[in-house]
Amino acid sequence: MTRSETAHEKDNAWFAGEAFHGCGLDPEFEQIAKNFLLGDVSARGCLTDVQRALVTVAALTATQSLTHMEQYLLAGMKMGATAEQLRETIYQCAPYVGLERALCALEAASPVLFRADGDAASNTRVTENDRFDKGLAVQRQLFGAENIDKMRAAAPEELRHIQDYLSAHCFGDFYTRSGLDLPTRELITFCAICCLGGCEPQATSHAGANLGIGNGRELLIDAVTQCLPFIGFPRTLNALGCIDAACRK
Image (cartoon, rainbow, N blue to C red; front, side, top):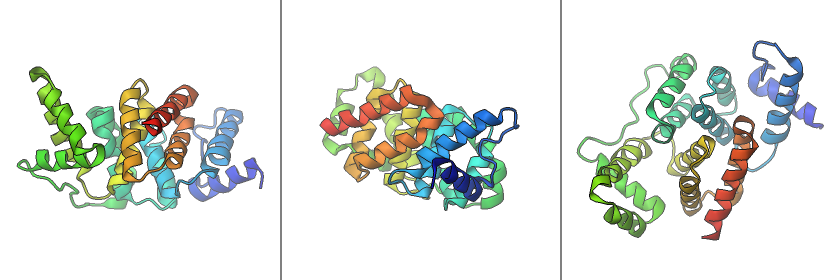
């Protein structure tokens, strides 16, 4: 099967033949884009179709490429992702890309996710009394108890609130939620950070956390590759460099 044939097949299966169709203003560009995303990128690697769908939604959220969010969500469901998984992907991006970006993504996604999910039950699994402790436990699991304890102990007094926010908000409010397992949440986090650009130290750290929790080098490379059509080559190459740096540690 040729690249164009593969793209055509996936376009029909996932996008009802409408991938990159947009307003139909430039069919030539649309064909180039479709062949690259669906004929090249989405046809290679070890990602499952569900992982591809979630990584794509994370990239759209981080880059605020929301015009066709509904189209990608509907495709994601055809790829096997549930409305809950897609919603939780946007939630997981929030502490890394910012609350307003996540809110804008949820707003763009609401026609699809609300229709599919209806009155979904809350996925929150922490309370005001235990969100810090449960978040800190996840931090220690991902990055090592000794590393986290040293980081917290070394924080100057005026920055200790940031460390507390990391534990309680980032890891407590989001990582502890149901709907996605921990390896998937950490993969989404890594992709969201890579899509932002300019966050290479954090991307390297989370590449290491992914490796430690069982998301191997090949999976990380394929996840970044899936982001490539949405973030371009410079950020992609930087992200691949972060994976290499984490593998050397």
